[in-house]
Length: 218
Ligand code: ITT
Image 1: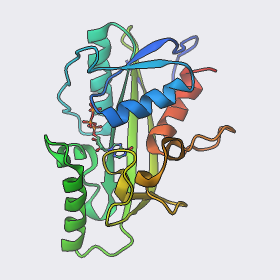
Image 2 (image 1 turned 120 degrees about the vertical axis):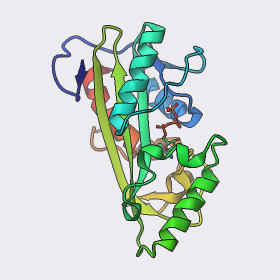
Image 3 (image 1 turned 180 degrees about the vertical axis):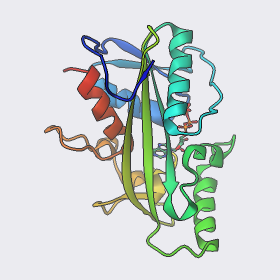
Image 4 (image 1 turned 90 degrees about the vertical axis):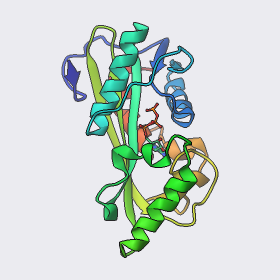
């Protein structure tokens, strides 16, 4: 049963440890940082020897659910998956759910970022080049229930890429209201989680805030 962040959840709390259903080390680090704030440990799917399921969904949520449920079934414990990507307005939302695929087997994100710039230039897209990141977090419980939370952050693309922090497309994404790219920010700045509960910065931290409100406590 999939719940879009609503419905009966009385008494459910995440604590102790959870499987992070990802093989992406940059993402795993961010998930560990976010859950660590609540003293929950996240163990990567790779460390447990879990396979990477094929991402056959058409939406971020579909793929997040597919990954979380496969890991929860295989591990017999709660699993959290993130499906995310960069959507470029002038490219009709590409690379979107294909963000990882644009970097190929070699995970060549320099090449993927260069391809985005080339496609924008050859389309004659007027600047600023608007884009957003989306993160869908799916939390699959061992009893078959799955909860999904989405976060989004809007901004502009900058070329050449700036900064070497973060991962993936971070060096070309400058979130609205900021002068630096995600690639130039330290992890805490990219998460941008305020202590007063107001809106976080990154797409992943925004999705995580919704999850935390439901299932985590200090
Ligand atoms: P898993 O499926 O194992 O989690 P993946 O890298 O294949 O790893 P996705 O299918 O969700 O993950 O692909 C999302 C891609 O979008 C990811 O590889 C990054 O390149 C990019 N991306 C997502 N979030 C990002 C972020 O916060 N900063 C930079 N790039 C990001």
